[in-house]
Length: 325
View 1: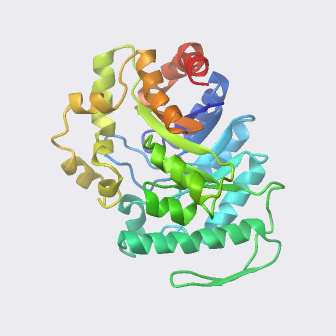
View 2: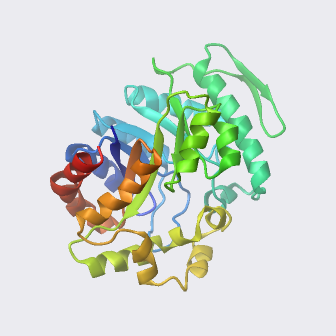
């Protein structure tokens, strides 16, 4: 059964709004909620980037049912992996075991701010591999963790507060190398493109172990399609660059420059825009056909969220569950 989620997009809404939207998303009927973990928005027109982990703590207290997840946290530059494990365990406790830790290799946009530069992709994957080992050991173990790797050291670390159920880990992947590296180490796949090869490769590398495949789809719902397209272009044209480009640009000015020739009609060709339920169902269906078990929607634009929840509850979620559930 496919599960449908809502994205708490921290780059386009302030922290008070994020917490309010989390409660509204649960009332609207979403199955789970994911939260981005950014230091900077992609474009200055988005205008926000509050601290995800403070908001997750608040969200855990205004929701009761929905599962929560980071989508995704980079545990290698801004955060030491031992600290990520502590944060994940704490949210697991506060949410009564409703939290999944979503991890990824990160983007320069967010990670360069600590002044350590931005390593090449092969080094980032080495760092991520070590980080996962540390996080797993801390989340799993009752004893003390010591670790000496090429990139990280941990000295006598222990999580004194852990939830009864171990916090599960998802990993953002984009190709065979990341799939083969991380499928044996973590619980679930995360991806933003509906590629069947990612799912089949993950299952093979994981040895057939059952896992969730969690995708994400941006949409720009609005009763006025022209306004929906305009908003998507203003705030989400960065999406057109693809992750190999998006991982390398250092700030919103770079994303603005890289996408200056992307037209509104180009964005509308790749992101469902307007009031058409069928268009959204078709786009989500591509993930379901590829083997994804969970799809989180991003509703673009802070000003459209309240109306979107009514649309989701009355029209969109019933259509998704009837046709794709």
